[in-house]
Amino acid sequence: MDKAIRIGVFGGTFDPVHNVHLRIARAARDRVGLDRVLFMVAATPPHKQREVVASAEDRLAMVQAAIRGEEGFEASRMEMDRTGPSYTVDTVRTLAAAHPEARLYLIIGYDAALDLPRWRDPRAILKRARLIVVRRPECDEALDPSLDGVHEMLPFEVSDLSSTEVRDLLARGGDAGGLLPPAVLEYIHVKGLYACP
Image (cartoon, rainbow, N blue to C red; front, side):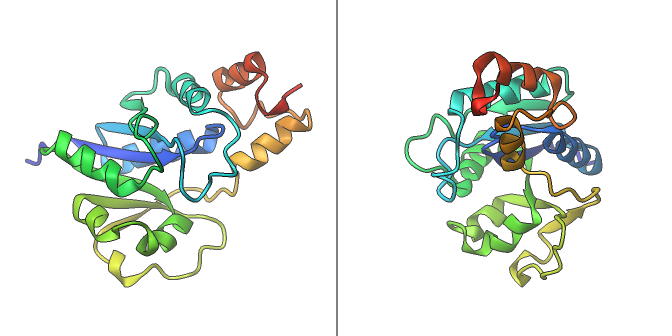
């Protein structure tokens, strides 16, 4: 019987973390039988340097608040503590070295999977981690053949909710209560993030 620890890596800016993020993580955990899901909070994503609004520490605190009490969920500051831009290949290499007995799974959206062949050293990523791909609305484009046999699609109710939409709603004074975990919404209000009234 296979007793290898299964670790899912769910990276993102989480600016802010919202309910769909949590549903994705739960679905991946349950589908693949993950022992741990690491919410990998990005410090300086190379492709989003101008889009990040909240500080890395605030984004980490929101993830910690959101996952409190969730079995197997952990917030990681690994990428935050790394100097310079955060590349997935560096994170996967570090985790593989720290947990040589574990099986790594990278939880990514379909749009990210389409782009993965253009990431830094995709072959090194795929050598160390299997992909769990989350469907997005209108994701009809075929994945690159290099991903054949190293990914599986996550059965998941497609959602187009984004952190950008949540931020915009909060900035307008809208009610984001149905989109965010209560502890995250409270943190945003207390800290006055996203120009939330």
